[in-house]
Length: 168
Image (cartoon, rainbow, N blue to C red; front, side, top):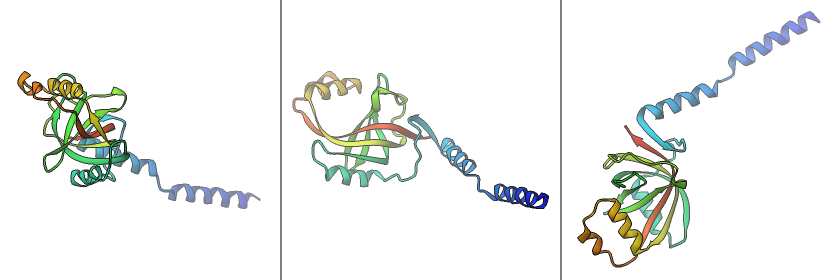
């Protein structure tokens, strides 16, 4: 009986000693992401990220009211100059997407223009009113003359981010 007990104890020690520690791997991966990126909003990884050209192709295949969950990388063209509560990302060919943040829950640094980011969330196509377009132009620091030229609503590629990684 004692020998069976000893064999069982040795067996358990061998099994637990040989077991792969996945939490250490996960911590190492999170640490690697943390050293390369500043994180805003929900914690996300850079895995499964598509580029801005592929995102533009996805947007072009959508119509007003369509929504998809996606993660993509791009460059910040513009950030709200008052609070960092929105940003415009380059999609290629001079096309941009307007990014807002889920539940107004986080903001981007005001000096984030031209930084590389990865955004995770919902992409959709929407019609933006003249009033909203003027508000965004004002937030971006546009002149009164530029704001006055806004007279028509615009069909836009929009994005609601729940998490953002910005390259350090």
